[in-house]
Image 1 (tube, protein in one colour):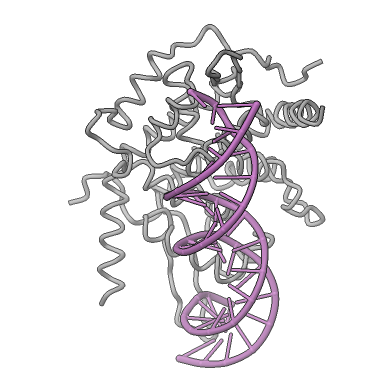
Image 2: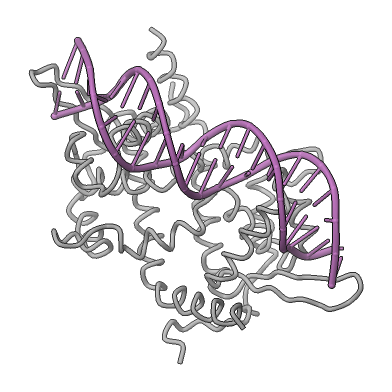
Length: 149
Length: 149
DNA sequence: CAGAATCCCTTGAGATACTG
DNA sequence: CAGTATCTCAAGGGATTCTG
């Protein structure tokens, strides 16, 4: 029935303690610490938006890409948004911008070694999600059906 | 000088072809395929926003959490947004909502086995990012300095 | 070509008040 | 307690036009 191989029930054989310890390390759960100054949220926010992930994937896939090629490859992105995203990705060290003062100008973008490491994490995540697409779609159908009734 | 261990230059010893092949598989680069109907973007979008990731982490860390506890734990989230995020995460099968018809009502949230698997991916990503926080911060400083001049 | 500038509109999200 | 309803405001992002 469920092609995805997941059951809706929660899993019993997982260690919440192990996860919790990792989270404590990651976020510093101390009561006097607020989440506001948590660096993880700050840093994740740059690359977790809709477009940045795609930009990183395309630049990484082609090794080097020009502005116009990126715009063509990434369906639906506007020049303005693409520029903004490229700037913040460059600022955070994910990619490198190189300008060739020819006429007309040529600008090339490529990932830094940090960006490449991040790309691998993203591809890993994407591959996993692709595998489980059917699970999510089934889950949605189930949810929507039960909400209508 | 660079405590982070990254250089700003791109890495030579990485296989763009391997990555590109993975990306082709993931996105179906065929010219007649648009990215609009790409399931990966659709599914990633649910859990890639600012709050959902935190919600998944907290629910996973505590194994089971009530609505009010989540609100207390996640600094700055409003009841409205928390409700919205919980609904979409439930819809996509990341977590389970259980209502206990007591007075007053009690509602418990816990991750599904799918959600737990996703949590592990997220923790993995967060741990990696935490390691490289200093790299990103240095990169920002460098960028901002060179933009001002 | 690679953007910058401008305008405009949709969406996200905070605050507040209310309810089964 | 666990939300819903309403209002409001800021930000994100699209379309268009212009330029070194």
